[in-house]
Structures are given as C-alpha cells and as structure tokens.
Length: 180
Image 1 (cartoon, one colour):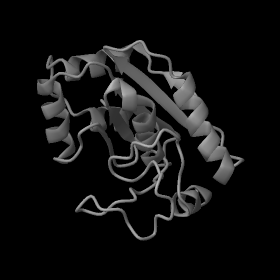
Image 2: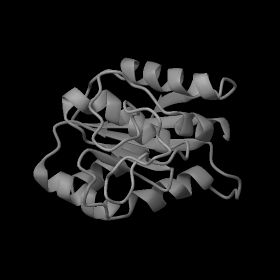
Image 3: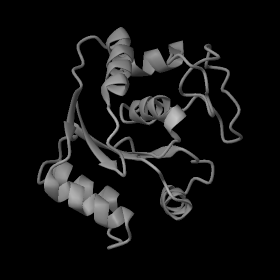
C-alpha cells in the first residue's frame, strides 16, 4: 500500500512516524509493504487551494477520482495530510468537513483520506492513529468516547485522547491488521 503525504505549514520529519507505523504493521501483517511518497505537484496544489479557501471542491472526491481512475479495483494509494500550526478557522473547517465534533486533532474519511492537525507534542501519535484508519482499523472508543471492552491495552493508540508516550496497539487492532 502507498501512503501519499501532503504537508501544509509544516516541514517536520516523518521518520519517527514512518518507523512507528511500519513497526506496528509488520508485527501483525509482515508481508504488507507500506510505501510513503509525497503527493505530486497537482494534488499538492489542489490540497493547498482547498485548505486555504481558494476553492471548495471536495478533497475526498478529487482524490478518489485520481486513485480509482477508470478502474473498479480498490486503490492501493491513500492520502495523509499533515497540517502544522492549524488556525482555529481551519480546524473548524476540517471538523465541519469531517462531521465529527470530537475530531480535535484529526480524522480519516472512508479509510482513504486522513487529516492530522494535532499539536506538535501529539503529532506522531496522531499521525499513526489516523494512518491506521487508512488500513480500515476501527477506533477503540465508542460514540461517548469511552474505551471499548474489546481494547485490552490501556495504552492503545486507537483509544480517544491517548497520551501515552509509547505507541502501542491492542489485540483487536492487531487482528484487524491481520485481516488485510
């Protein structure tokens, strides 16, 4: 699988994120290769325009058209947008787009398009959390933001508001990854 990465207002390294995510994936799904690539210029310009309010074309449908093209086969590419120094206006725009009032640091749309706008101290953990959704992993919290009983690791990165220093997953998440 390929994860295309776009950075807005950020030039931070992705090394720790890539290492953490590939480590978690390889534990559960050793044959799955994850390739990280920057978006191409056209997609980058599109995302920049949407984020800065230059147009209102839906990024999900725009990327879906690129990823699927004329094929009906599931696309092998996913898109991760990492936003540094998010303004309140942009955060409100993203939360409204996601239709998730609790999306304080990021969200993933249809296991296909993820946005991260977590504060710097939570950036890597949230990038991993949102990226696991790109692999169809479910959250380990319910609609009331309480941890699900199926989550057997109190430090699981898929719990809501997880602030543990380590990046760990529970057996439920591992099983979901094994089913890929």
